[in-house]
Image (cartoon, rainbow, N blue to C red):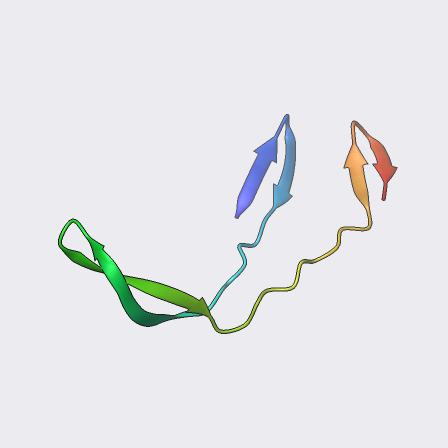
Amino acid sequence: MKLSYRGIQYNQEPNAVNVHSGRVVGKYRGADWQAHNLERVPVRQSHPHLTYRGVSYR
């Protein structure tokens, strides 16, 4: 996805998270409410080279 902030263009790829429906844990306004479980917990990516107002930092 192409994004822009204060005139600087960058690309952001959304994280894909696989979930599967669990058991029904309740009702909300007459509809069943299910708990969703992650198949695998996503690992945060570190960003070693960041820039703030043109100055690089870690």
